[in-house]
Image (cartoon, rainbow, N blue to C red; front, side, top):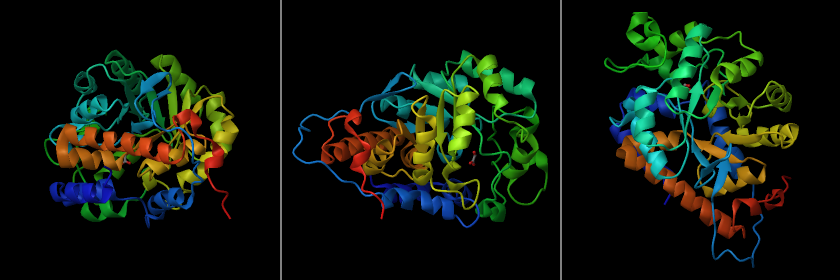
Length: 359
Ligand code: GLV
């Protein structure tokens, strides 16, 4: 069963306090982080009764890839910081649960190893576009050769949000851990010397291309030959720009409340994006999805699937690859339970009128 509070407590016992702060924290006053959760809760469900739910299926597809449930693994960084199984463990857990893992550019294990651990399960790659476009093009070729079948382009991080926990504790990767898919000079935090505050911020602000516009979507689709999923969209007008520039899907996201302090909650941004996209591409959502009822709420608002980040990291920290599998299994089971209790035998039976109109 999903008991995320207990899981987080168990993860907290094993994680270094700085790592826990990094995963748990948000930017600024962390209001966007809190709002993400609260906005789902505020949406009340109007369940159907007296419908045949003796057999419920959570199965669906994302970009034509079958998944056991509409719950994908959001990209998160530094899995070796959470557990020695690292990103490979997350890939194995996701594979065993029938999900799709999105591997972060800030992975601490090479994409080839992670793909091998997933043993043929679908793997997508989250991309930060480096100022060195040649480097980015080579990385994209490499992840495609490793078997990744989609690129997830993060667009809400032209600069790093101000994460006060990381600034206070001087968050940096410990010796021996590195970002294996960034240019060598940026792989280790210690090459910045004694820069105060968060080493991640220093690196990101130096390396990430803050000049990119929607043209990057077509460029990436050309050089990569893979569908480009654009992650970090919160407005209808931006959604339209992305679709017109060639996006294959969108993720409504505020980066788990880790970027713009005060950003709108994703549950509130989702309807505007779904409306603007008008069925042209699939829309996914992340941020504060903490159980099956939230998954149903997201589907009722028009999302095709959700992504979960922190709970997967906590599962990894607490139990390695099996912990990841257990978290994803629990989301799938809780989604089945919520569907049954809503009188929906499948995800296709979820309709907008399952949600109460907000006062
Ligand atoms: C990296 O993407 C982070 O949000 O820390």
